Amino acid sequence: MDVEARSGKPTVLNDTTLRSNILDPKYTVENMGLPTPQVLLLPTAIVGAGQLIGFDSDAALHEITNVSASYSAVENFVMRRTTDMRFDFGISLVKLWDGAFTGLTMGA
Amino acid sequence: MAENISFEDVTGKRCEVPIDITDYKEAGLQKISLSQLYANKFPTAENSPSAFQQFCAASGIRVRPDHKRGIPASTMHEILHGGTNKYMGSIIRPDGSGRQSTSGRLLYPEVMLQLIEGTLRDNKEDYLTPWESAIALRYSVSSPRVDQPTIDVTAPEGSAASPIAQGSEPDVMVSISLSERAYKVPTKSIGLTITDEALQATTIDLVGITLAAQARGERIRRIETDMGNIINGDVDSGVAATPFALASSFTTEVINATTPITQRVFVKWLRANYQRMTVTHILVMLTHCWM
Image 1 (cartoon, rainbow over the protein chains, first blue to last red):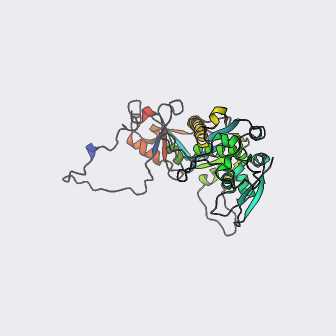
Image 2: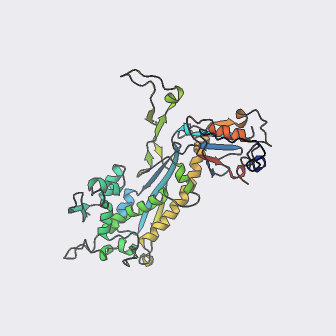
Image 3: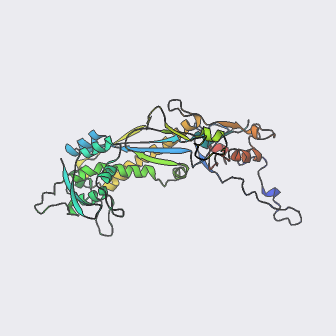
């Protein structure tokens, strides 16, 4: 609600596109450098109230996946011809570069 | 317990090589997967299947059913008790000695690991798909302990590029070093047991889907927990907390609980670090968004 209802957000009420009697020369800012950020939701316990965290997907996150089977489990499975098997897996997301993150505290 | 198995090598020549249970140990020592080990040991031509794929085909492991030819995926009974090659026949020698081959059993764990790894890596679910594009770098390891490189670009950021004399060394360097502590990927384990009665009815693709479903839930939990560490910092892993700027630092407008953010603050914040980064993603709790 806070981001969407931010004060000063351009709305249809101050749109003069269809009112040709108003002199309103249009211009565009070409190098503003504002993409359309994708919003990802996280639980409140992780992103606190009043917080926005922005990051650059080109350099922010590094995901490491470990999928392995312990040798003893494979050996048991193959040599002793058991019908049980154990697979180990893990996944971890780590910060690649501190500079790719920026935070904003709203309401203060 | 070595099994001889044939494959087409890099020159296109068919040759027979021994594969062995200790290959798993060798792959583990080299911190690579079994299929990577075979790719290194038995290179194949660029456009032909990898050695591991050829071994699976030669052993008759059919990970997916072939509906066009009416061949079902291998049942767990075929893999555990031999007979995986009844449709293929390529490994059975004229004297029938290859029929009780354990190669199916030998290759099966790696096939399952690949299925789980594939599910963890590429996911088409609503929740996980946007995260796919948010991750800059992704790699797979076959050991829970990994060395995490630390990138330090403080020097190049702090000073603007300066003119340089011919032949001299640059003033500022990006430093990439290994962190002092090896990083441990928290690892979970899935045990799989199939009853004798179910062996005939259970196919390898069904087992793969079941194991992967478990791994998928784990991935969502890990993403949320790890993002918590990245945002709030984690002393144990040496991760610094994300710095926060106050909304009021971007404007002279009144910022309070009633007006927590203005258009000016939002645009200025998005653009604040334009020389260093572009805000492609924003993390937020649901109530701050559109509810």
